[in-house]
Each structure stands twice: as structure tokens, then as C-alpha cells.
Length: 145
Image 1 (cartoon, rainbow, N blue to C red):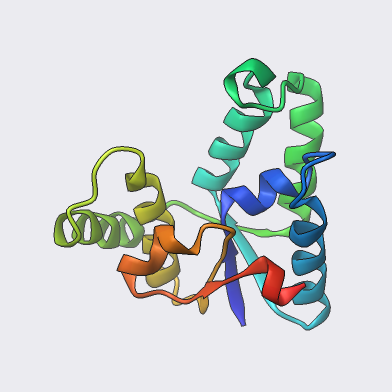
Image 2: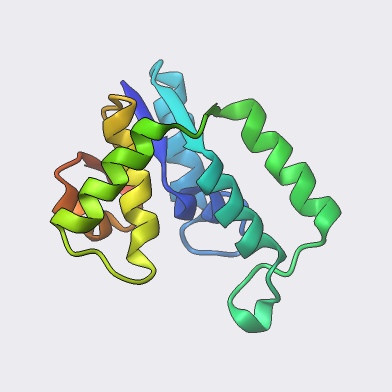
């Protein structure tokens, strides 16, 4: 299968001490060992960078630029990074209008659009409800690990 990882999977897989650390890592390892292709988007990388470098007082990880750069480089080696495309944009526009998506949820719609535009089998996410309106398959990392 071809599966996109949600940003929460990426963040939890590097956040030491978080209760979901093990589930994030185990699900990625299991999917990889089963021969699945794992993907991320440029948006995922941007969101990951945001959380990693944001201060802990503002719900971030408080990492330095250097540490975040090292973590990001690891992501780029492990996952296939999907390029930006007009197809993703077209799917996104249709999703946000059709489903009346507002505010921060537009980012979830963009990831759903990537799943649709690239013909992926679904998304691995701790927040399956965020994607339920888009009619894409959501893989629960707890069920996978």
C-alpha cells in the first residue's frame, strides 16, 4: 500500500516522553517492514518544522534549528517527499468548498487532497476524525503497531 503520514505521526515519533511516541514509531516500522510505501508532503515538513522549533510554552518541542534540521533530514531519507502539484491544489479547492472547510482544518484538507491526487491508499494519523469527511481511508497507528 501507499500511505501518507500525518504530521502528528512525524512529531510524535520524535517527541521523547510523549505517550504516543511508541505507537508512532512502531506503526511506521511495521508498515515499512510490511513493504508499504510511506510518503510525506512539503506541507508535512513545514508543519513539522513549526512544531519542532516552537517554544514548549506555546505547545511546541522547543528544538533548535540545528536539531530540527537533523530530524527533518531523517524524515526526508525515510519517506518519499511528494512534490507540490496543481492536481493537489485542484483537489484541495474542491474539498474545502464541497465540505465547507474553515480555519486550521484547511491543512487537513490539503493532506487529504494529496492522498486523492496521488492515488494513495490512505493516511496514517492519530486524528482520524479530522479526515472522515473527505472519504479517504485513515490508518490508526495504534491498530497498525
